[in-house]
Length: 578
Image (cartoon, rainbow, N blue to C red; front, side, top):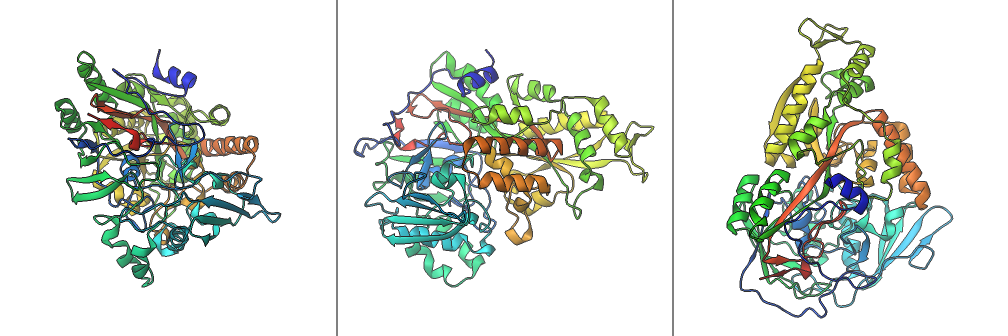
């Protein structure tokens, strides 16, 4: 049975030559190692990631760039952690706030208060005690507009954070916020804390100087990082690797694997070769793709030397530049032109070329594993491959086919735009297919490849004049993040998911209502309406859910497939390695 059928039936997409057993999970919370007994290992677990992290911070400041699921998971811990199903479990907190109790109160004016009680005796990697005041300090830091995170949820919704005692974190909210009781499981697509503590004892002296560039340049964020996660940073060789050692003070007990190394390998086939040679024991953070997974599956199957897990991961879509200052041609701002482009994308050809026909193509970012999927899927406008409909829409926008078959506008201008992707074999194959089909349809589209390092350049990717294909977390949060308040600008250090600059007042109103509605049925209706507006206006061109492919040798036990709102390393403290 095809995998996309399997995921709809079982909410999980998986193939494996053998599937590693998973850790047991006690009822009502995250799995524990039963006492944190130290289990030293003779060897170092080697993980391959595609790119070096600009910072280990769970929530980067200024323009430090993208976080990466598994790498940040290793060194960070939050109040809450999504499990393999994306469900919130208490982590640094003893329990989750419960609506209608003293721990989650809703006031008549629409404001709220949630209370998190920290586990006792928590410490930072340097041995300094973690207290509620570290969360107060974190809120103070991230609330500084110049640091680029002040408006992002949940921080932008917090009115105040208090620490009445060393173990009590009180969060007061400007308005209703449905994810106030789950924070880190709010649909952000990874296990990185959305409201991480920051070590006041380390950062406060430089913070009080209010020199934000100097603050961001501190070695704390990189080679001297101090966190709360299962591993403590031991060594960072720039451009090559970093190493972590098991942290005795981890909230859920000392990890069973004593030491690990993360190497950065930008080439998928090099990672493949290292896995086959046994030099790397596991791929993480998009270091191999579906194609390499197929090769590994064939090579490992007969010898039972490893497993390949495939599960729905990042949503893939094409941004369409719509800001007047950047859009070229300016007709990209016309919904009919955007719809015409969408109808001229041959998703069946993409599926066959990229995933041997086994991909999950989509019209919206809400994955089949999510509760709201059926409602949202029904509401979303569909764009099947239809060049005749595409031509009709272009005619309505004032374009006709010229003698060479290319569209010519009323100004005598030939429709010409540029499609950009980040460097990778899959991305470039995808780009070539899309650009060729668009040219066949009458759109003159030139191709551009950005170097992988340019993934960190928020300004470049947000001011690109034409079309650019990108990936992001699958889930309702990514849809909501296409409100106009999430348009990257110089004022917010070019952070935000809405890089195309799409703005729609009806969508903004729905997004605001969604964020402030607690009733699950009502949220489903609002999300469906948002998907309808988003897709009907062709805010972006939705493509598919990029399959997350994770490979591991049979010397490692514990990793398992997860939903898009979690990360494969969520239970890393329970993994074993021989």
